[in-house]
Amino acid sequence: MIKPTRRRLALALSLGGAALACVPAVAQAAPAPSASTGASTSVSYASVTLNGTVNPHGQATDYVFQYGTSGHYGAQTPLAPAGDASGPVKVSQSVTGLAPLTTYHYRILATSPSGATPGAERTFKTTAVPLSLAIVGVPNPVFFGSPVTVEGTLSGTYGANHEVELQANAFPYLGGFQLVGNPELTNAAGGFSFPYLGLTQNAQLRVVTVGKPEVSSPVILEGVAVRVSFHVRSTKRRGYARLYGTVTPAEVGALVGFQLLRPGKSVNKGGTIVKAATASYSKFSRVVRIQRGLYKALVQVTDGAHVSSYSAPILIR
Image 1: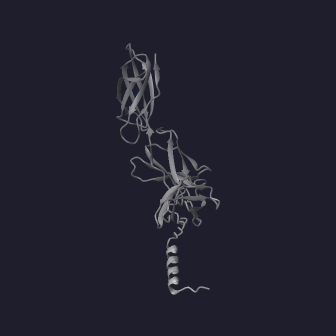
Image 2: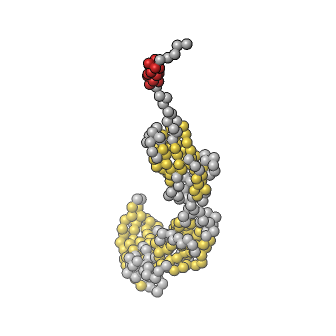
Image 3: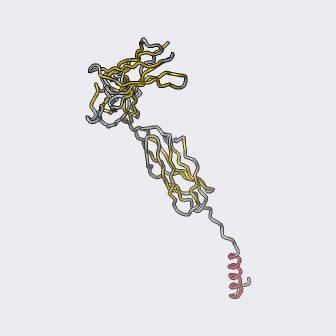
């Protein structure tokens, strides 16, 4: 058996090292992205902002938020890019169309060529729909002495069977809002209707909730139109007639205009001034040249307590 010399051993070790140096290193596969589900923010009755953190680990990575009323989710946000950074990246997406007073489950899910990684599941609960009031006066304006109805809706999660009341602040609007009649309960749809029988002057009206939460409707101005009666009688003078009538309540000094109605327009046929009659009404009268046709009287009121009004038309043959 030939024993190796020290020189041969040194040569062999030298050749072995060179051969090892020529073997290429095996490349490590990039890891899948990391994902962490963050807390929800801006939670309302119908929307929320979902937040999270993604680490792409140097690869192009996308993410979505999965959400739903259970751990099965059932919905997700649109696919969005998280980039290709090597460190954590904060991400968020807004979600709308949610149901009020509902608990939702959600998580983030990040994907890249190396795989998909979900974050831990979290939950949030949407809020109640805030209460809001809308009202309208029917009719508006209302003729003096006629009833008006104030109707509307209390909208929101707890709008049904909620107590509301009607308040009025009559012209000249210095006395403040006062309760009118008795409070009412809204119906199953949040609707309500208040009859108002004693409105004699223009008034600011509103409806408010009784108790908490305190909600008030926008203020509406309900006009009270003067009631105008209008009549005609013949005179001894050919081609002329007396136009006369009353105005309730008394509006002494108000202007009266007589108008002949034509298709698409009206023709002024003179006028006069309202004069005193009794404490409850005033009167007007004027002889004018007439043509056949339909006439009406306009009483123009400027005192602020009432609004102007037309009479019913009369036909002169």
